[in-house]
Image (cartoon, rainbow, N blue to C red; front, side, top):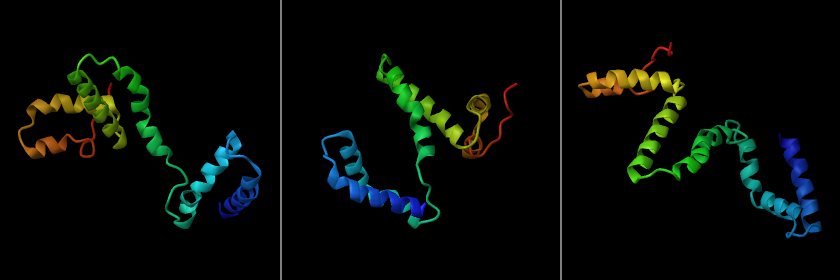
Length: 132
């Protein structure tokens, strides 16, 4: 990555004075220049990823769902939707199949009587069987 970054920086430094900041290329080069230190940060520390795609994919359902939430009739309905999304995304983040985990949890929740019972139902603590 370092040679490619060096070439890109050289091109940017050579091209930036030649383009106006009013057109699309000028705006893009200006953005690149102002964020250059953030771009090369991942090369300074070997453990950092080059992109944040996992985080972007995790929030995508909320961006798509935002249009659906416009039609929540009440604040309580919107809250219920947000809570359900939170449960589904938490299950996914813990490598659980959301339907299987929700079914497993909702079947056992009425039987829970202690903190340990509740904690055992959290997606990082249980392994429900796949739905049949």
